[in-house]
Image (cartoon, rainbow, N blue to C red; front, side, top):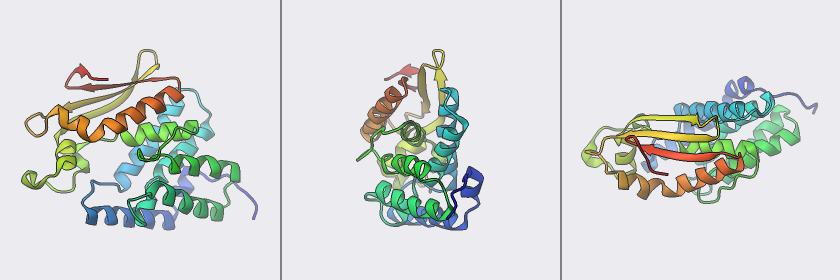
Length: 223
């Protein structure tokens, strides 16, 4: 098959990918996880691309980051366990069938296969940007229900986030996750209980891109 330039628009309009994203989110809903559907994957795609744009990476690398961000959670349709690896294999099959160049496929599936904190590694710039974009998506709207009395700690911490912003500071040498948390819903310490490993991973991913990573909660710099 002749190889061609696959765009983010091509990926977004692909019916097969849409089905896998939708069905993967239904699997996670049945297991009690927060939202991992189009809201999450599109936000992840755009932030991953924006990070590489700000750091001066090529337009094509920015687009590959969008593609990886959009497809990164499709492996959840198989199982939450090892979903990054399952998703990478699925993405290989889909992108190869679409005619993407193997070198570009390799970058995308390496990023997808290395985004989950249990096995993640910042193996290339796209992977590092994907890690940062995925792990900083903390927001109230990802909680599926509003029965506070029935929340587990994951729901409670996400629901407590009244405002969440991720932005560059210090002449684009630092990436900040800036959260406003309602401490009547969740104590700040609960955030660290759930997200400490993710924040450590963000620091490693940022360092790969020659960045500092910082966490601000209720106006206080925590990391």
